[in-house]
Amino acid sequence: MIPTIGSLAEALSFYADHMGFAILWQGDGMAGIERDGVSLNLVENDNQNWADNASFSIGVSDLDALYEEYREIPARVGPLEMKPWGRREFHMIAPSGVCFQFYQRAAA
Image (cartoon, rainbow, N blue to C red; front, side, top):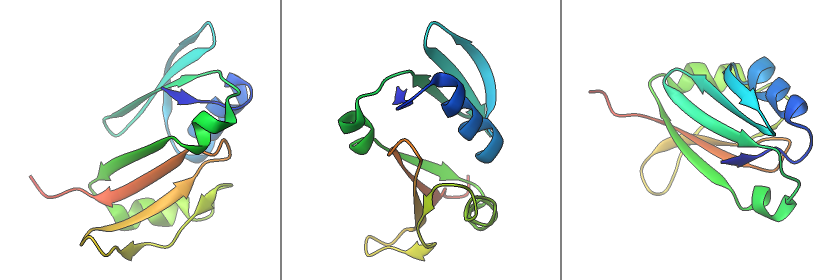
């Protein structure tokens, strides 16, 4: 579950309008979203400590394209770089404080 830190409507707007997720369902302070086979559940919650300590690592098939898409959205998007642990990735802190780590998934 990903905390919204504010209204569910505001969070859904960010994930749909800026991150390209489709809203699958919503009700009673919760919602499900999906993009490119990645499904997430949002929960309306104002616990900032939870959000600031939440981190999600997501493997994608085209890291360069996703970085170009996300680098100008209203979030804190870090550089696309090779990390010391040998993986190319970038991090993004959503307005809620939740951290996403995107990396290039190995070819199947």
